[in-house]
Amino acid sequence: MISDTQARQHGDSNSGPRHKIPIGISSCLLGERVRFDGGHKRNSYILDTLGQYFAYRAYCPEMAIGLGVPRETIRLVDVDGAIRVRGSKNESLDVSEQLEQAAHSQAHWHREICGYIVKKDSPSCGMERVKVYTAGHVERRGSGAYTRVLMDNFPDLPVEEEGRLGDAALRENFVQRVFIFRRWREMLGAEFGWRELTEFHARHKYILYSHDQELTRELGRELADAHKQPLLDYAPKYLSSLMKILKITATRKNHVNTLQHIRGYLKTELDGEDKRELSESIENYRLGLLPLIVPITLLRHHFRRNPDPYIEQSWYLRPHPDELMLLNTL
Ligand code: SF4
Image (cartoon, rainbow, N blue to C red; front, side, top):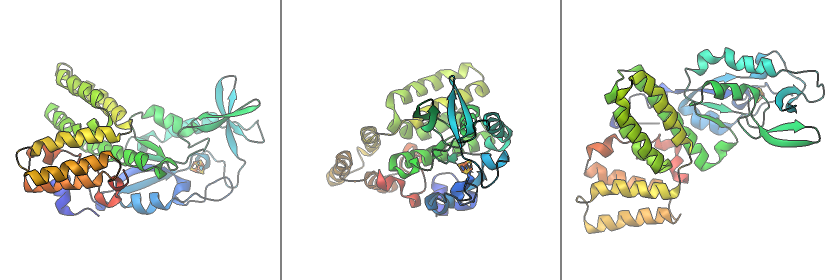
């Protein structure tokens, strides 16, 4: 749960569970019995933990195209370079176009969501490394037919597989992108001008730094020059660059650089002992002896006592709710 105080500190009154973030999801992950054999793949982390912040919209493309339960399994097949979705036993069953059409037909709610969690390995829902069968061998190089169209239609939308959410860095990356995407949406829905966009960038700059410093600097220069073009032409380009940077996994080295940058704002405020303690916690994080939450908590503590208007606005020290404990495992 997020306290109202925390929400106010962020200038974001919608952070709490009462204002859940809309997220698309493969129905079987919520426990719906829609798999080919009448089973499900309920995922308790997605449902119980992320579900405190995410409002799920479930969709099963195979049910939607009328395959029913139980049904014959389908798979991706390479037919002369074209990937088709066919029955595993009955090759005359080909549902490629229906699954693609299912994704197009759901675009009206896809454009309203802030992320999508899909079932790995599925020829319909899988995001990547789905098995593709060719004469004589199998390669993990496909995407599910429904999810491929979803990602083509909305390339900036955060999409992740439930299997990859088991990895601490990928999990944090996805949740971070979702929260940023939601903030982007909120900004567009409110008064939106160059001032708001510049402020949005400034508030996310240190998060971006932790992913890629050079690309962040490039985006900053691009934004400074962008005023020559209409805002509504530039905004989608900005979003694409932003989401590309955020997709790059943040590294320990980049986090250390970012923490050191932020520490610089306390140069004159801290006494020798506080400085030593802070440097030690950053160094121990660098060595992998402490998780990221430790230097972050120490920085928050010092900025509470020595407020700085720029850092107070930055999302880096509070990228998502503490209760998700995503920084405790980085
Ligand atoms: S993976 Fe997708 S198509 Fe398969 S059961 Fe789950 S929601 Fe339906």
